[in-house]
Length: 121
Image (spheres, rainbow, N blue to C red):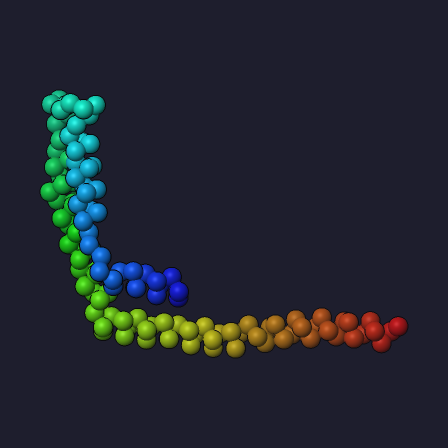
């Protein structure tokens, strides 16, 4: 739950995807240039470099901005809080009905053996 909350806080802060532009430009340049010179015979690498810079980069940026807007929406926070509360209630109910009775049986069995051994002495 804490990690989810931390993720929400991180994504809802003022973050830009400029690092992504730098990354895609770097990948594109590395695909275009090899050993400091243009590799004209590496047409597939040049096509991949253009695809990274012109298609993949903008698509990731658009998705990033979309997710950021969604996470900054107050309704999203309300829904996330409701979801977390539902899951917490379900976990509590499960612990009360399934786990605690079994733990009680284990405790009673352990203490019964201890009590029996004390009475024999």
